[in-house]
Amino acid sequence: MEQFGSAPDAIAGAASREASVIAVCASERKGTRKHPVEAIELLVGTGVAGDAHAGAWHRQVSLLPDEAVDELRGVLPSLAPGDFAENILTRGLDLKSLPVGTTLAAGTALLAVTQIGKKCHNDCEIRRLTGKCAMPSEGIFAVVIRDGVVRAGDAVRVVEVSER
Image 1 (tube, one colour):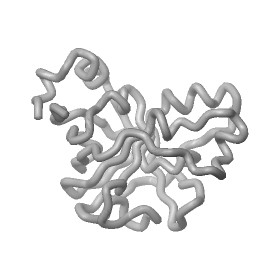
Image 2 (spheres, rainbow, N blue to C red; image 1 turned 30 degrees about the horizontal axis):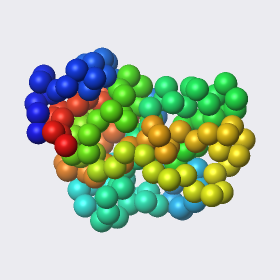
Image 3 (cartoon, rainbow, N blue to C red; image 1 turned 45 degrees about the vertical axis):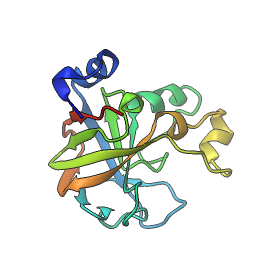
Image 4 (cartoon, rainbow, N blue to C red; image 1 turned 180 degrees about the vertical axis):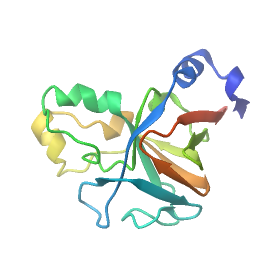
């Protein structure tokens, strides 16, 4: 892994800007939109405590840049945090440019990026209404590598960039 300061130009440019958490979201049931909450507790081996997607797998935590949601708000102004089932909505960091294996600090937690994007499910209401869904191209997934708490307003930063 490369230290943050020696990251490739494209990643370093995206990572060097001020990045922040816009909202944190959770849901007790799969297949539903997540709802903004005051804070989420991230646990190693589990992900978001109390969230439907928590568990010992590679997609414990989902992150989405608010900039991608902004594009779709032009078509669907009612889009709100959690509508894409993201746990952490960010601003100021080009998430999709981060290689798998990259370490992120969010709030007091540490995350390791495990997947970039995902296939949109067939019954995606947002895709039906706007013609596009942000998660497949802009969302990322991670596992928790250090327990912590994340709140809206917390910083998000790249700690270490994977060489993959």
